[in-house]
Length: 108
Image 1 (cartoon, rainbow, N blue to C red):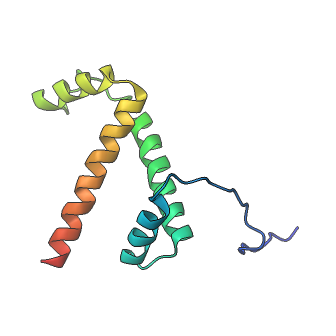
Image 2 (cartoon, helix red, strand yellow; image 1 turned 135 degrees about the vertical axis):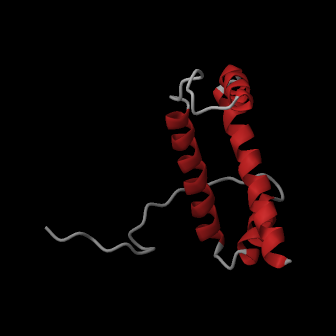
């Protein structure tokens, strides 16, 4: 059986209602990344889902692991006390800061 080629005509479609101002923000970010708005949204969703799956696998680390420093153990213990929503928000914040730092270093 032949595998169907991906095209915008055959791709799954989903309507999203955006809060006021978000469409313009997405358009600005997409323009800065030289992508379409659709590509920007897909890239962001994929990044978020990847972070969440990485987060789940990283939580399997034992706090008593000799590979962890004292600071890493403390961070891991505190991180595990957060709700899943707080964990995801923290990881997103760190990833965003890293992305900003990388952008700044590439411009300088």
